[in-house]
Image 1 (cartoon, one colour):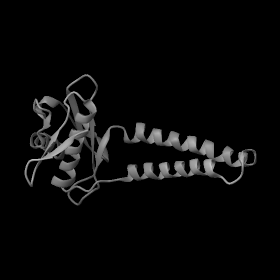
Image 2 (cartoon, rainbow, N blue to C red):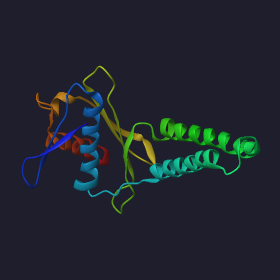
Image 3 (cartoon, rainbow, N blue to C red):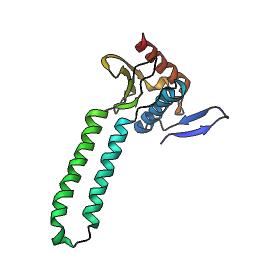
Image 4 (cartoon, rainbow, N blue to C red):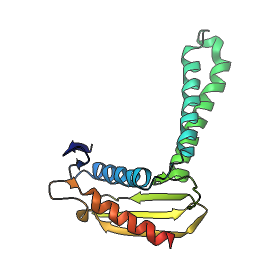
Length: 179
């Protein structure tokens, strides 16, 4: 888990175990989301997350009905025949949304007056130091800028994320897309 250490009032250092690929990916993803959300002032589109939350809530309701229906077991078979398959269908839908719709997407912006919505995707395969960042317009996925770069350019030997360098690289990628 990335640790934020306050250096002074305005900045914080993110330190991770550089051999923990999940912590490294999460730290980089968080810095990229911060860049687009706070530095670029883009509003985030939460539609996929909202759909996942609604499906998860319905699945939990099905599980609650199956568990706490007031009639004893043999009498509640009809209810169980309905809610158990519904629970499995909802679980399948959640898996499909996560695997095929959301994929490796970490940020999706809303449209602004000067910019179409963008989607930011990242990938960090196991056993490699190469990190992939791709930015695309939501309505034109063919126009995509994809950069593969070593994480050693963004982390110190102590495992501290150099957010200024990462944000500069992400800004360069974003500017190439806008041209």
